[in-house]
Each structure stands twice: as C-alpha cells, then as structure tokens.
Length: 187
Length: 187
Image (cartoon, rainbow over all chains, first blue to last red):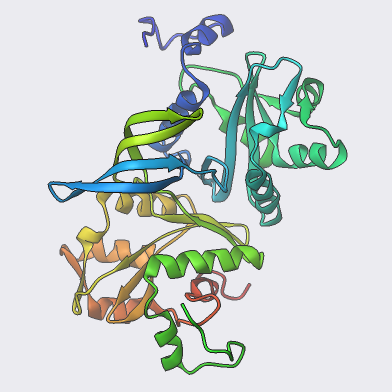
C-alpha cells in the first residue's frame, strides 16, 4: 500500500476512503487493534480461527499440520479489554444493499452476544454495507432478532440504529471512538 | 472416564484427585469452563492455537488446510468475562519439583500479563506442580520477575504467594472460587 508523502496533513473523506479501499475489513481492524495496543489504548485481538487437526507430522522436532479443517467459532472473532471493560465484537461485510442477512452470524455467535450482554460486557457488530462502516450494538441486534422474525436486518434499521465509524488513516477504523460515545458517555 | 455411581455424595480429597488423575490440565479446564458457561456463571473460552496456513485445497466448496504450522501466541490461552470483569489466564504444568521454569511463559505472554494489569483486567497463571494446582496472580508473577532476576520461580515462592485450587468433581478445577476470594473479596 502506498500513502502520499503528506501523511500528517489532514485528509478529506474522499482521499481517506481511497487509501483504505484496497484494504479489507479484517485487515483494517487488525491494523487498528495493533495501533490501539501500541498506543496503550486497548488490548484487543482477533481470535485465531478454530481448526480441527486431522493429521500431523514432525520436522526437526516441530509439529507440522498435514491436514485440518476449519471449525465454526463459538464466540465472536475479536475480544479484549478497554478501559477496564470486557469488549467482544465481530465484523461482517455484505454486498447486499438493502438488507444484512442474519445468516452471516452463526447461531452460536448470537447466543454469545446474548450472554455477553447478560454478564455485563460490551458487545457489538461492525457491519460494512453500502461502503459505510457501522457499529450496531449487541442490544440493538438482539432487539431486532426478537421483535422482527426475519432472516435479514433491513438497511433502514441499520441506518436508524447503528453508528457510523469514520474511516481515517491511523487507525483505519477508529471504532473505539464510537465505543466511547455509546458505552462511556459522561465518563 | 468412569465415575462411581454416587456422584452426588461428597468425596474425600483422595477419591477426587483419583477421578481427575487421568485428565490433563487443559481438559479439566475446558470442562470447568463449559460448566461455568452452562451454569451461567462465567463466559470463558480457551483461544484456538494460532496457526500459519501454508497450503489449502477445496473439497465440495469447503476449504481444507493441507499444510500449516503452529505460531507462538501473543496472549494467554484463556480469556473471557466474569461478573462484568475481563479475565485472562494461562495454565502450565511442570514436572520440576523445586522450581517453575519461566521459559514456560513466552515473552509476548509476559508482556500481555503486564498489559492486562495496566488496563484493569484480572490476569493470573494456573500452575500445576507437585500434583497441586495453584493460582498465581499476574501481579505476584510480575513482582517475582522484576525483583528476582532468575530463570525460574522457586517452589517456595509459589507455596508462599499462590492460592491452592482444590480439585473436585463439578467443575474439576473450580478456579473461580479462588478468583472470588482474591479479586472480589467483600463484594
């Protein structure tokens, strides 16, 4: 990736979007989390994808995986610690312009969202849709599920309830600024 | 594993240790975490081991890993949410009777322990040594590291500072009872 030389100057929204366009959501979040860790702002990591190992071999006493398959995760992909609080979230991208298909979230993950709320943690979804990155709280996600018996979340609901995360240079997706607004207001 | 028929009756320490003897520390902790989740006590999971995928294939549109290697973890193995608090820990077993080799803890993990303390989370080590399971707080671990410039933690220090976790039937390793004593005293 190439950035212009004047990276310290302010960017317009358009040029910023352009710099990040090649970056997928997962990469941009990993870079953001690394930024938060380096700046001592938060300790948030992507969990490794769970695998089932079928076959291994040994090379110079090191275990090598010769066959494995991906398993379905029981939790959301990202979790960690921010301002003394437990945080967990997942990030999903859809090309669908009018609705976010709930099939993007595994059933175990929806159970996990309910549980994190119950146990007093912060939990949300980061949804990229129509080229905009939204933060939808776990509570608003569960409310939709429980009240609307539908297979997708309408874009109108997302536009109404979710918070827009502005893209920037460092960190590329500053979702903690929204977490501050939503969960730490007045602190 | 076979349990006697009278599993609801109280056990002596000896018979309890015996039932768990065949179970390794990781299995016993996974069962304990499952118990905590089912009973709605805590949401704590073992993180999958991070891997680097070298080669994949596709079978019926499913991605199969054909070659991969294990990577060094940047965090401790277990983390989650208990009584609204962030918890992270690792579990280590040593056959050494007089000292716990610090080489068991990767350097990144020691950094992570320092960081979790700094960000207000609960962090500790579960150490099995001389057939006893101990909980050593992250703070006591770091104090030892910083004050004694040694390559192992003496068993005397562990006996002095760490808390013994009694083994039982359900959950096999009830470490949260110690977490209650140490971190939630008076709540």
